[in-house]
Image 1 (cartoon, rainbow, N blue to C red):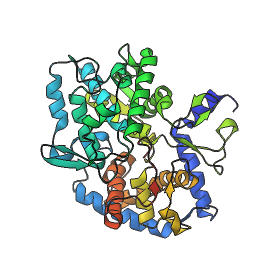
Image 2: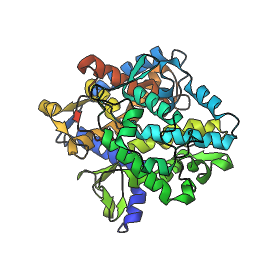
Image 3: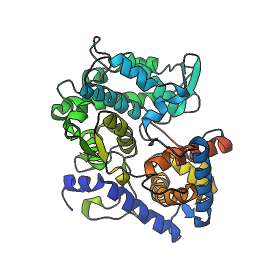
Image 4: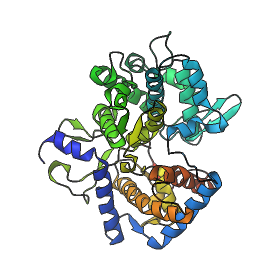
Length: 404
């Protein structure tokens, strides 16, 4: 595989994410990892924790999919109903475009906020992912991401390209006493999104709206494949990520080097994750379904390799650091232990999911991976981090606001 575009296409599949992550897990189980050991005897205990928390959160096991829309429901507020009301009499397609606009911007802002930031809504302070969701929601309603004052409930290229640090800081209530990790990185990411939207009118329309994905996908036909949607996002948006991970002149996005991964031709040594893009794909499923679109193939998406899911595995002892002092080091996303931790997380989530289902007495059709994550692994990882370290992840990651 010697053509950069062909190599990138291989790495833009969840098959590549899964198979290459599984290779790292096999290697770690064989004792060949420099960074981690795997304790398979701890997997049942991790499954017990996830199943117990899932039962507590969803006693009837009617579990919604892992999605940004769960965070929009934080505090018991039906913000979707509020947005429906504000959109008034627009048709189904425009309603879907607006919800896709909101989802894309909110997900791209959803990297680690840090322990000191929060957003206050009606006297209630929300932090971390929930806080970022509520903040981006209000920013969207206020027209922060629209260049048309008469049409605030949209996101367009012109507004994103003109976004300033001060404007986003104001929307997110950031100040000297309420600092947000990676604010500058988030602004740069949204500006690059604006460039990508403007440069692809065939996908995003003349105004350059993320909601153009509704028209450019097969949504108008009534059926969308989740993996096709992910690939469309990766093709159109991989250029926005700040990492210089490239094959030739083709940007790879959330795809990192690990020499143990292998692979044919130019794909050798690359481990793809596409975490935020997959999180975005999960989060677009509901707006599409609300528009009457059938979304198929959701099971092709992987577990999300971020510090809540990965932290769960370390905190339950499924994964162990070979050198405990590594927990005191500050790591960058490109560092090998972080790349490997993320790969092991993807592979182990696939093994953890059926154990959780068995404890809950359900199957994959009733409890797909998206619901295991929501039930689930993400919440259990957060609970363990809160209990053990006041919410901090077990590995310290230097964040620019675009990966974690």
